[in-house]
Image 1 (tube, each protein chain N blue to C red):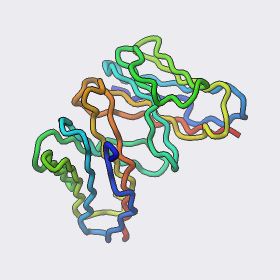
Image 2: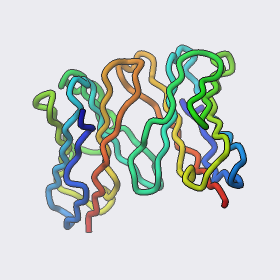
Image 3: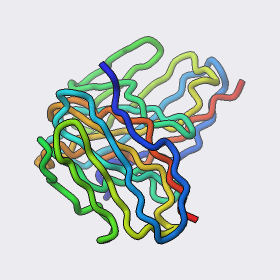
Image 4: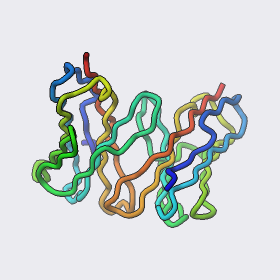
Length: 112
Length: 113
C-alpha cells in the first residue's frame, strides 16, 4: 500500500457544483495533513492545513479529517473554472524527521 | 518576508554539461527539500537538509546528482554530467518545524538536449 493515495482523476465537475477530493494515508500516527493546489506549469501552493478530526472551513474550501479511517478530504463549494488544477495531499512521515509524503495528485476540471 | 527563491527559472543545456540549480530559503526555515517533478513520476523527493545537514539523500537517483547547503541561506543541486532523462522541473521547498507545511519555490524547468 502506498503511504498516501489519491485518485489521479481527472475529476470533472460543472461550474457551481461541489468538488470532492479524497486522500487516504497509511501512517496511523500522522498528526498533520496538508492540501496543495498546483496549476499547470506552477509550483504547489498550500491551500489548507488540518490537524484535528472533523471539518475545517476556509472560504469555499473545507478539509475533513477522519483519523480512525485514515482519510482526509477536500471539498470545494461553488466550483469555479479557476479551481481547475491538480490537488496534492501531503502527510508528514512519523519518525521521518521533517519528511513529507505527497500523493500523486488529483486533477480537477471545472466545466463552465 | 520573501518566499523561496530559485534560480535559474529555466535552463536548457546540452547533454554532458554540468548543471547547477540554486535555492535561497525563507529566513528561519531550517529544513530544506529538493524535489523533482515529471509527468511520469510525479513529485519525487531527492534530498533534504535540516539545519544545513543532509538528513536523507536516498532519493538522489545517481552519483551524477549532488546537493550542498553551505549555510542557512543557500543550497545547490548539481548534476554532472547531465543526461536528457534529467529533464524535469526541480523544486526547492522549506519548512520550519515538524507540524508545519512546506513552502515551495517557483521551480527550475530543466531541459537537457
